[in-house]
Length: 419
Picture 1 (cartoon, rainbow, N blue to C red):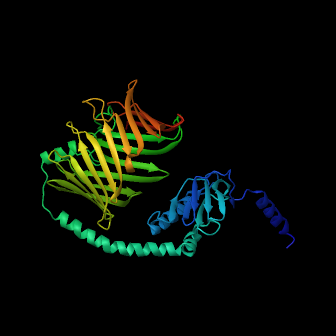
Picture 2: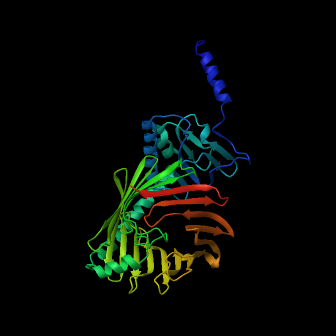
Picture 3: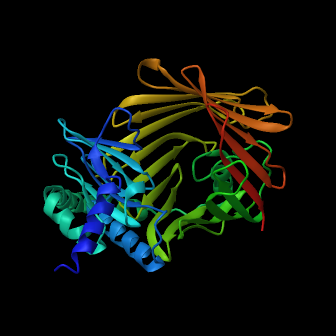
């Protein structure tokens, strides 16, 4: 017993001198996340200053993603997910705790806050699920009940989609050209950068976090055909996400497939009818785009898994086919109106976009200008610049976009060049 006593004494001394990973918060503490009762949280974090094997880190991420899927993502009451945040505040209403990941003695950890007690810090991935089931069992149970209710609703939605899909219609080239050239939707967008050209071929787009272009946030390998994306390979933190666009013989989108690390995550299926096109997701949601005679979208409806309309968007155009007004209604209320202005009859890109919310209150103003041969995008809220992006993309679709924050500091640099 006497032989191990010095070791125990040393261990206690080290622990006593080390900063606490969890302590009572003080007013000076600054946190990336603040969670207060009745909200709960389940965060999976890393202290990058601690070295660990790739296998260990990969296992931590795998268990984290497994638990994330059990909750179906973040819910109304439980924040769930992997995060690179380093400082947290948790409050049960009477006591507030401060957690600093940079003081964690291990590379990976799970932070569990049940809304009532001091946050639990767990380093052993084998214990993650057991603790979640112990402290968040009611939340998991509610999620399971919601899933059962959704299954009934999804069956109804599936029947709706089957009836739509059964309608026979074969788009011809004239129909396809109208959709491609005039609908101006997320899936058939007009050129977003005035001078970016009609991209063709394979490009790499690297997004840096610093002005010197030394810290890479993520990369995109993009394949274009006549300005349209065919494939986008997104790589971040060792995770490869691929989005592939499949076209039919007249050039319309037939489907879009998203996969992560080789596993298919989601598929969008396109159905075309004489006066509309409909997109059905493998998750059970759908979008309906109702067209006028020119192929422009007059109204767009978004449906959830229960076949309920969650968003309605109404469009008004000028005589050149450019959008003037977008009126968005969410769940039957909370309208948002986007108003576009153009400074010439030749440009497709707006010069000013004003976004207004409930009762006509201005949320933000976005401007687009050509200054010294560069395209400058500025976001303004409450009369102050929120951020500004300067684009030097040329007609060959090569160049960079530098984004600055409200203080003029570079927060990202996006560089695109041909592969």
